[in-house]
Image 1: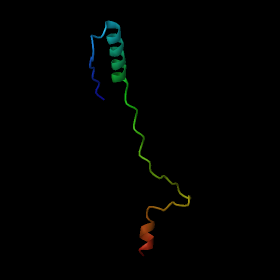
Image 2: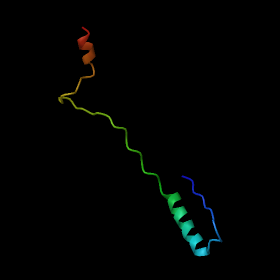
Image 3: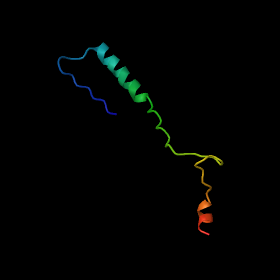
Image 4: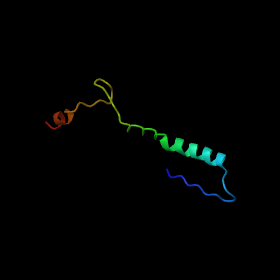
Length: 61
């Protein structure tokens, strides 16, 4: 994220500049939220869609 400051008319006074600096520093220090982990199906033995890892071998015999 890139911040830019543009003064359109007049000069910013010290209070406004100090407040803006504080806001920008806070935003810079804030860490990005961790990304959501990838979703994948996780089944355990005995559940309906569960297929044992070696089941493809038994069907080829």
